[in-house]
Length: 276
Image (tube, rainbow, N blue to C red; front, top):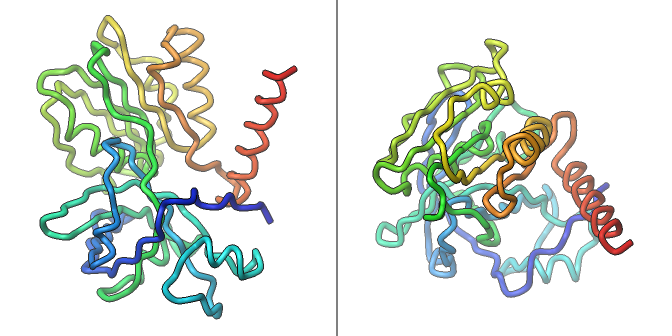
């Protein structure tokens, strides 16, 4: 099993309680949580702000109050909670609510099935937030590309886009039933790519009629299309590296643990090449 990196020290484990759930589309479930633990949550200003949701291993008794560093120091690795990273869709300190949107595709996996079964009163454990992206003022226009896993971050980015700023958005979902209303003051052209219709993000982005000038891009989702678009944007389009936020959130055919191990190995190899 792939080793999981410990959460960064100094970030507390936050415990909330589910307040309500909302079925957004056939494959999206929103969990709204709150409680006293929300006082420990500090927004970081990024539109891709994410938390690492912790899913306890069934049958394991954990120390109370729950603390991830204590768990890792006192229990064998196979009993550590599983981690899954999710974008914070909204945070309302006045109402005392934090919302996370989960993709649910059947009973496989951990997070989706948990979200489908979640009910008021259930515990939601996480650490964070992390994040690194927010639309800047240097760009003349913005490119946002992603699949279901990146939809919450793209939706939040659109909501914060200044009025009139050109934005090109490409979002891949299973079909029209999974499209969601997106709100923005930007001059946004939004194209939904339906996986069931045989469309794909790479072809759509390469064929776009883009505005001129400096572009800032956010490209996140399945590792295969992310890698192709990274090469295209940097190589053929000449996009500045400092204006490209790109990450494979997951890889087809790999568990989350396997994919994180692969990414760690790739980073280590890249560091060895730079040091050579």
